[in-house]
Length: 305
Ligand code: NAD
Ligand code: KPL
Image 1: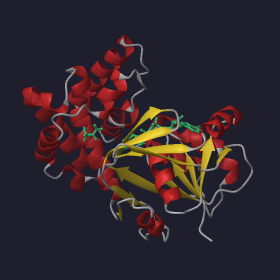
Image 2: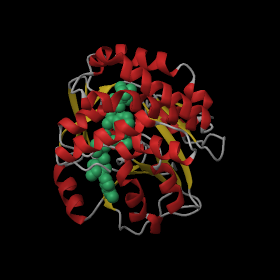
Image 3: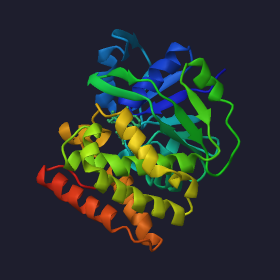
């Protein structure tokens, strides 16, 4: 009998994973915040995945976080700023046998979660898949991609990666997941805040090459001096490549701001600036960018933490 996948966070990525796992016949349960959310979910009949214009509903069973049953495998699919509180809400159900898969972008939330549940194994993920919600309990699979998974504390891959293969979730076990997370964080720091402040698509940054180059130089220096030299390799060239390849897209932070949603600033630029300070690395342009972004978010009435 396969271990049940408990999925906490019925948003874009949580639904994308839950529906594909369920479609493969694997046991999945959706963990909801409270009884009210559970009743609303049950009334909807299940989770809907829209793929290539076709919508299919999967009746994944739901439960509340407060339920007493033990959790052996937990996919934490909320935003970085919600991760610690979300895992705390199910802490009474976790044990030394529990494995957590952390889908959060950026850095900082993974350590916060691991400190909350020191006995459980925490596996970090970095994903280039794309999905968005187009209604309650409904998600559109917008961009095919890849998910890298790894455990900074333990290099051996878990056997349940087979479940991901069965579910058609493209993935790879990564022995250097921290390098991947730092590299993605650096890309996000070089691109996302500037797209918000210049109010442009990623391609619009071709008009702001100097600012991008300055941020890349500080990010590369920071990565090299905080023990992540591999994440710094050819960073400016990759940032340039991503800007070109995604020229017609709006960055995820731009979309959050445009939709009046809280951003993950503290786990991206905020984390980079905090680490720079801790290591005594000068990063004046990153810090200035963070301050400008905070003022911009404050002016829009959005949370800036
Ligand atoms: P989302 O906002 O669509 O979904 C998060 C869900 O978690 C929401 O439904 C929210 O209500 C729920 N949640 C939060 N706290 C909870 C709690 N205590 N109990 C129960 N539910 C709770 O977010 P998302 O877009 O799926 O992003 C999740 C993470 O994945 C983020 O860090 C994001 O940056 C990253 N990511 C997203 C995508 C994407 O395409 N959406 C791609 C790559 C990475
Ligand atoms: O991941 C991204 C995002 O928008 O969050 C890219 C496309 C790399 C831009 O930083």
